[in-house]
Length: 140
Image (cartoon, rainbow, N blue to C red; front, side, top):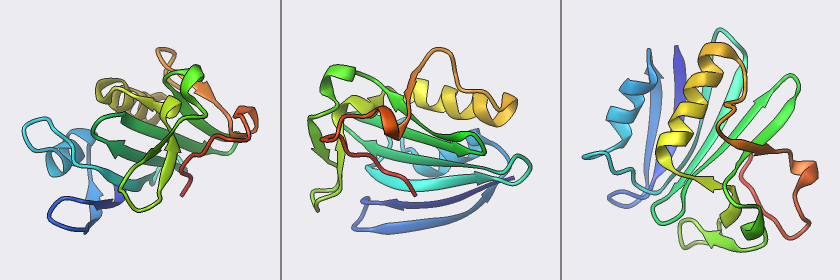
């Protein structure tokens, strides 16, 4: 089971908390016509003891963070944009623009980690220690 705790900006602030059996179910809960609202939240997977942080900003894409026994890893979309910050909700929640990736890659990364407990090879990953001092990320 995948536990989710997600806050969206759709219709004001809305909290979604629950359990699903698959990522497809979660996508159906979150997306309307394949479009995801701005959101921030976490997923935890019972059987493998991992937590996944997700953040969506419609213009930038998805920010994915995976934390397991070996550490924390963030999706890296563009290394050159790590010092450029995006205000995700317009209320001072800033994340480095370079940490965002397209939605289809984000879901693939989450699914591969849940299935194989390995970071998706199609995505570049970075640890918090390897980010510039000016960078900002979300870690729940």
